[in-house]
Image (cartoon, rainbow, N blue to C red; front, side, top):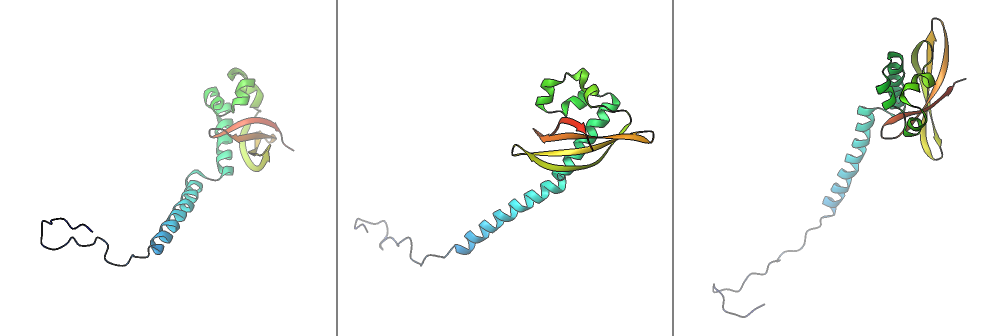
Length: 152
């Protein structure tokens, strides 16, 4: 403490006179709230955006309907970069379009080279007869179509 002349007659009061408070409860509450916000964020994404299967099936539906409607711009916007390098826009329908009306009938997930992939089955109903194809969808700046094959 200093001994100099003071403006007032008494010495300056010490700044910390009481015992310190235990803040463990506040710290635990803060960590718990952070974990709760993280869990609610993930649950909210699934609730509002849908699961990976829902997103893939929705993208496949939009893609096939755009092909049937002749909307090459929309369909081309839904294919992955690898397919864009392989197929020009005017040949997209020839590669993916089948005769009939498309209907997404299911999907399954897998991992290829450590990356998630969805295989979406599309049934093309052509007046009682039909064929099933499988669209390969990958997460690439959104869910994108990245190939097709005949399903079993």
